[in-house]
Length: 117
Image (cartoon, rainbow, N blue to C red; front, side, top):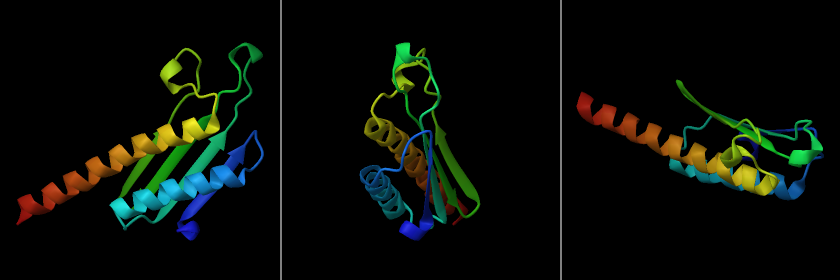
């Protein structure tokens, strides 16, 4: 699974604990659909005003044969549901959305195959 996962860090140092969390989340997605080609995960700490604290941005890009799923949040403090001051929470939330999208895509693909028969 590690060979399928590319993790990029911007504005913060690499964290082995967070990498392990990301690899675990990607492995869970791979169990939903084993055709995953590559997962690209970017963890970013953009420069922001100190009044809003550190807001982490996590982007998850999942490449499947003929399909791509991208989950990305703007860490704007105006959108409090998307603002994460804890990197683990930001990773968890991004992968929760990605998991829902993978499940939806797998179900649509399955329904398309049933309709074609």
